[in-house]
Image 1: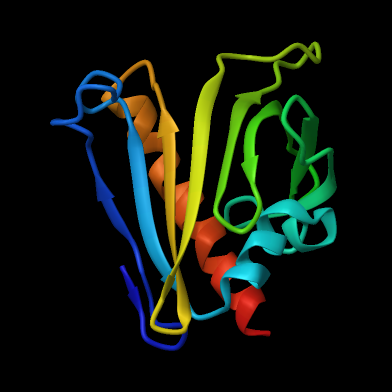
Image 2: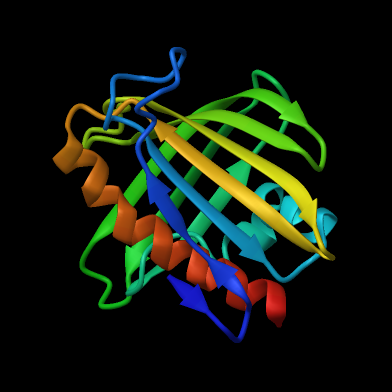
Length: 168
């Protein structure tokens, strides 16, 4: 995907040749160049007010974002469909926080009874690139390629909103 207004690009690929990666095809990797300084992109991933402006797929709005961005700190968020008839909660724990460079945290959709569903690990790395920020997003392991592919559109839409938020 290329967004010429924000000069953003997404690349989605499998981790077929990395010995430390999950089994081939069970990792989602999205790389995007964001037209914003790294400090602002980092804040967009760590400040609840920023997160609420971009998290979630098209047709959903964040109604709650909270968390403690420290190793061992918990986070939780809720997105609600714009029609108001569907609500999804997700939560996790930060495992690694390197300011302006790297966030590693668990992610699980909460089941209707409020307990976490299947957990994945998300790693976000940020690097300077010609006055912009290269963001690399990794999520794994997925139970199947179909499960992984089901997350591509939602994350790509969220990152479109992130790019628009950063440009505003």
